[in-house]
Length: 174
Image 1 (cartoon, rainbow, N blue to C red):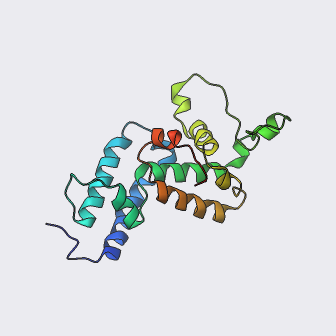
Image 2: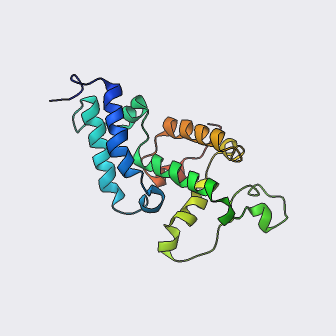
């Protein structure tokens, strides 16, 4: 039995945001890349299906878009990029590191490391994700409100299910 006929979708979204979303987004930049996030994403999709009254065999990608809710990995990307934005003093632009005019001048400087644990951490992954953003979003990264709104719109359109999907997506002029 579905709870959708009993409650309107706006009420279900309010319950979702106040209970489930509040819990999963707490500290997301730091645990969102862990192996345990897969289990949470499965639970996330299950909740979305219950809200919409669908069976377990239905793909959730369109349901996320219809509800205007970001999948877990897209939420991770959003929270990590906002973390980078709010902690700019800990990141170095390539333009600050060298004076040659290259296409990568507005990217963040990538530290060289071989430690996997560091590469999965918030600092390193934040740099990788920021550098993979489409140029039109990077250009407005000086204004937090425009940056956040544009980034949310972009993530809602693409609804990324994995980091691999995000990194493989070549941003044509989205």
